[in-house]
Length: 365
Image 1 (cartoon, one colour):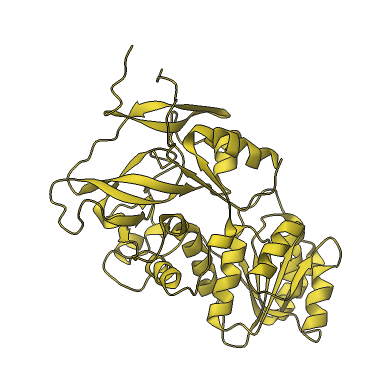
Image 2 (spheres, rainbow, N blue to C red):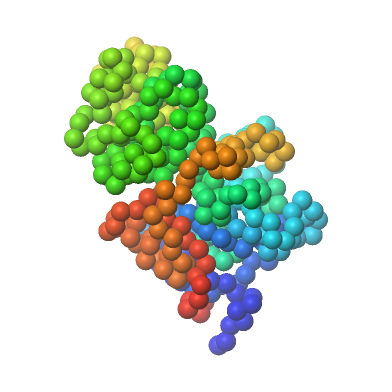
């Protein structure tokens, strides 16, 4: 059967856990108040790997990918705020207005939302349809590669804002994946006096050094808690941010937080964590705050939210994200890239997927 390429698009489709297929699927149709975005680049989130290979999505088939930016390709009826060809980033959470959190502008805290890339089709594809209210213009001097990282950079900023970092604070970050390195840059912009960064991969530590950070440590070679105490005169850090999602770093973050300090849980947990009674007692006596953080703040009408701040910071070079990109991969090789990340056969930091220059996807079905 011959498939009309003008009505279909290239995509990586998840048909079941570990059942990824590179194929052609129908181009999504645009409804009133919506736009169609031609994908420039889509970042692979750390959550995409278990989503594709372990946990699955909310239904099958699904096109994953929620970190993306591109160019407006079609406007739905009633859309007047944007024009064809505008470059945009897209907030992937599709909220419902009839929820108390939404009424307060806290869309990520609402219930019953939809989500591009996990509950609805996302951007491991050529096109995505999204409500116009979820779009933000990309500044002229920001590339689509950079703009595709707006979502994780906003998550990192949200964590720093949750931590209430103050000028002169000492801060420790555990885990130097893309969001951990973005968090470090936000801490520097917030005026933290000492930023201590920990990971176990030499390549990630080297990226941190290239970004201008000096207090960068291999957790396999020295105990992070001892290191933090040595660098803070035994007081511990004002703020610790756990970005790895594993038990050793979470325990270390709690141990290294000073009296009346704040510990932020940022990394998605990969395992159960057991807190020793002595550590709980120490946390109580030190009266530390344990803060959860999830997603980011986005506003339809305000010019002061995490997403707009990120794009402004990219534009004025407060945030330097290009050094984080290690792989730029066409969709035709996207499954190979996802498997590489799953198996960790090569070092990677930020992996971006983009439409293939020449498409050789299998027919659907």
